[in-house]
Amino acid sequence: MTVVFCGEEHSVSPESGLTIGRSGDVEVDDNPYLHRTFLVVSFENGFWWLSNTGSTLTATVADEQGLFQAWLNPGAKIPLAMKKLIVWFTAGPTTYDFEIHVASPAFKSVTSDAPEPGDDEVGAATVGRVSFTPDQKLLVVALCEPFLRRREAGTSQIPSSAAAAERLGWTLTRFNRKLDNVCQKLADAGTRGLHGGVGKLATNRKARLVEHALSTQLVSEDDLALLDAPADATDQIHQTAEHGPDDRMVAAEQGNA
Figure 1 (cartoon, rainbow, N blue to C red):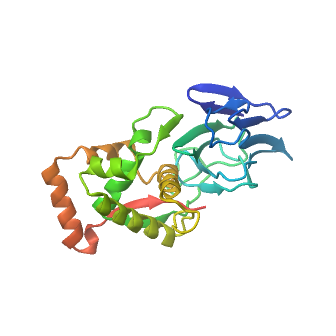
Figure 2 (cartoon, rainbow, N blue to C red):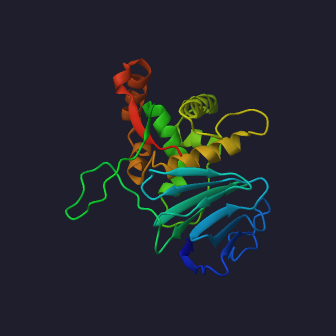
């Protein structure tokens, strides 16, 4: 088992395990919002496990293909049964991600694509389908932009609503309205942690949206071109989305655990 964070590799032995946090074996950051020990990697009953030992923060765990996603609440644990997993979590204004590599995983990720010669293991992934208008897709890309421009796991800050609105050339009111629509659409499809209300501040909701979009590959590096599109072309897309038929919606894949 190896944990990779900010370009550094941390080997994990079954006997000692590994702690991740503000003062863990992997010292993530001197962030007062981060638990001293937040996540623990351990080997029990023949499996590697990831446990959330914090009291308030959650973590998102996904495979590298975006086919599997789990939301790890405080007190929860999940088996690390795939070759490569990516973990995202947010503490205060900062979102972190790191990779977990398992040398001998218990399971293998498979897709419904035609198998390669000599590959007798074929399976199908269950993937939900959520349709976004071009404006909604732009909003998600703008929030994920700092992560999509990075080349390795590490730390980034999610843009404020005001900064993202300015990046898109929108008013703050328009941005917040479309953020509500995106979160409600994903919540209706079964994605947790996106509802507003008591204890669900906008910052937390945006962090959960970004973690979900990245872990399920709703957006990719290629989508950054949408942010750099000419203003006239972007406005035309907006008008088409607002007044055109449903078949002009932009479809995005999203997986749910």
